[in-house]
Length: 303
View: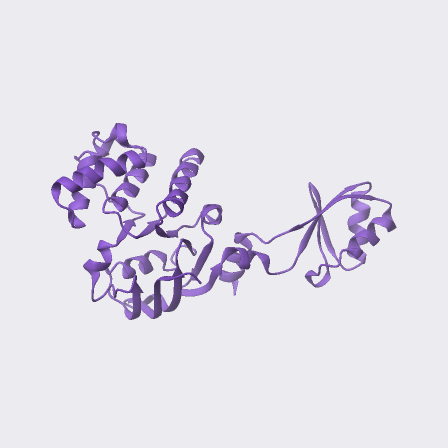
């Protein structure tokens, strides 16, 4: 694994009788990591504990710092884009971002300078003197990203950054996130329930369910495991071909082409060609398919 950015050991957080985090052990390295889980899995609680905003039992470390004992030092190096609304009505966006920069420790002139820079970066340069009350949802999401960046943190916690955005807005937000990691070397934890967004920008994921870590690791490794399926393009009797494959012990169904799962998830495609010969069809294309992140997620939360 790349250099460690944050980690926890037996991290537990309870609210009364409800256990939000249950002995969470995780380790996150450099780059972009997706934080996945159904509603109520503990994702936001985990981020707030790592920010030093909530006390918890167990151990946590962010950039070598303890968020419980050194919360100000941790937050000086973290940028947080919360899911909930965090904007201050009655102020312009440049005033909001500069104010939050001051709270992060910047002096006044530097805070306003950085506010202008990050608002231009996220695409709000022309609207920086408008009151935030007039902003659309998409503009508010960009503004929340700007305030997370104002003090130039090493690590970003982004909680549902594409929530409520239209397809164009989602694409642009994901592009900004990728650029921040690739060109500005930010380490990013992206918490989201939108699996395609996570799969698009996150090489690594952590899956939470009912307060526990149920999967963590590289997306490529997770999606390469499990049973192998094959996409078979044929010319001829597709229904007969599927029936022949079923008699030979495979699973086959139509989805544009014929999707085939071989017995035991194997790689021996001779059974496919045997069924083709038996039914007189011509195989025009044969490609392996991989598991999706959704498959990984559903398997993880079903265990």
